[in-house]
Length: 200
Image (cartoon, rainbow, N blue to C red; front, top):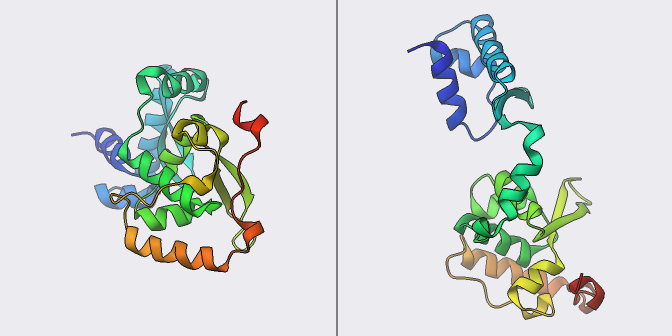
């Protein structure tokens, strides 16, 4: 088995960017050797015009799709054939709906897994949107959109049902929501979306 094949396999399994040091240690290579192999892999995908690329991201290496295919991927994600959300997407959407505006880190904390990919999918489908930076952490927060209400047949977020029993940590989240509700002034509670936005 070649070093390049092993590196590809590790990176395909990785859920976040992996540093050259980590990859070198995993395969018993020097950092220089691992870096050379990684550059060769990246060059191969670039030269061959493949649909994926190996890129340096956030101090590490990660496979990504070719940016030129963004339109194709977006069309695929929102097509009727892909209209059903996965369980992971439904759980993430539930957390956002009940805790909005909420940061990606808080969503991951509730679900216990990385939610980057799912959040991107929900953004592309128009079910959630960015809601500005968190005043404490500065991280981007997310909220549901009028399309979310439309898909659920709701006029307002106040009509959301009790938390789904399959939502991770539902009991703890119920308690947290109760505390939040008690602390919120009536005017601070989520308001009904304007009629013109719902019909857009």
